[in-house]
Image (cartoon, rainbow, N blue to C red; front, side, top):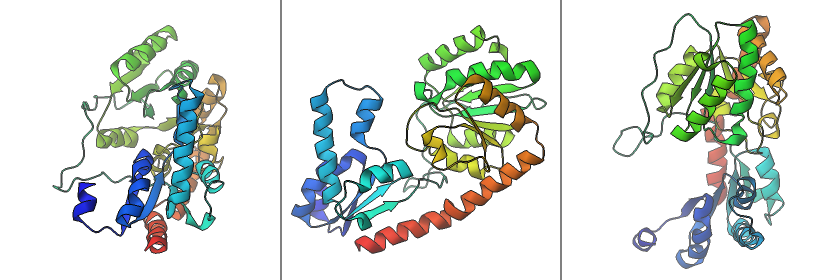
Length: 307
């Protein structure tokens, strides 16, 4: 409010729940409002079981619906969320699907790259073993239990394979380390903890296979775009969060169960002609629809519409 009082803004770009108060400030200060809707908060309350209170969910549904109606433009980041939002916007022309598909490091005004709190240094890994990499949060819907059980099957055929799991808070890491030991692959699993983005990218460049074993959710994981552009074959589960972007041509798409995931990882580890076709098609898809030039074109269309 202090900034609004001191400056004259043509547009305010409100991310997620910030729109709830920006909506009330809009008529007072006369700016145009962009609602950057990375998720539906009522859906998040239900999906993450934050509360069983139907009254609380209704409050957020009301706030969200009124914000969608008040915004001059609404950004969504995946087709499922786009369909959800368009049903609630008075004029569908106000909607813009703009995927979070660029991944250059975020830089602060002083020029220093943004650093993750508590991030660790990347581990030393053997050069002569194929790395199967998972990088991301360790929440249950990410399917790490599925991945570890699948990797136990992979090891029966590829005893040299190494599973690297980057991310996770200490309690989460302990849980999945115990599962790896129970599955008999504890010595073949490396848990790095939270790493800097560049350290994760170094691991991805070393990897033979990238994985996204998600089992639930509708929003496309933002890491998918970087994985498409990586030049490394991707193995992903056949769930709505993935299939909005991915198909059989650009990744090894598998069922969310250990046998199918293991078969996909083994196929990707072969590094054969199919792998080369998948990697090339993935890069072509990224360049055509999700690259920086594609992203900037979508942003220009949005800003032109609200200016």
